[in-house]
Image (cartoon, rainbow, N blue to C red; front, top):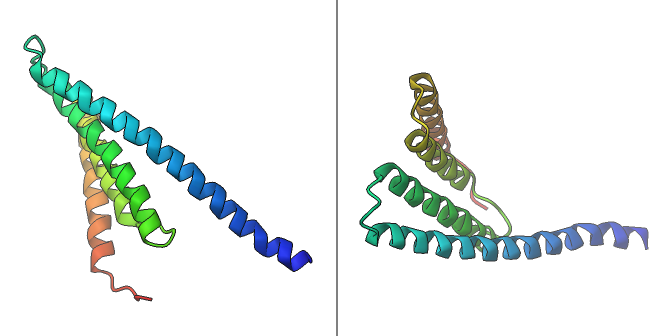
Amino acid sequence: MMRFNIKLIPVILQVILNISLVILAGILSVLLVKELIIFIQMLFNNESNDYKLFLANILIFFLYFEFISMIVKYFKENYHFPLRYFIYIGITAMIRLIIVDHESPLNTLLYSFVIFVLILGYYMMHMTPRERS
């Protein structure tokens, strides 16, 4: 009886995780559509010529898109998050940060270094042979 209960715990936790991720994907989808509407309004609004804000909104859109793609990939790859998606999200977030907050040259240099390290990590991960099951 005790072994049955112990084996049931990971199943229950996996169901809770899956339901939570589906709810999160729904929320992110709503935010993605909202960001798309804001993007379209900015495009047709002749008063706003702030290209930094425009680019920041595009990158926010891609962040939502990447998170939703990562959740889809999680279910397609049998409950596994591929590491490369986290690297993509990190690179996109750092690029957005450079566009939005580029007042300090030192911070911009540090953000660029972080992007370089993430790209290096992706390259190393991509070049490392891995076993396929």
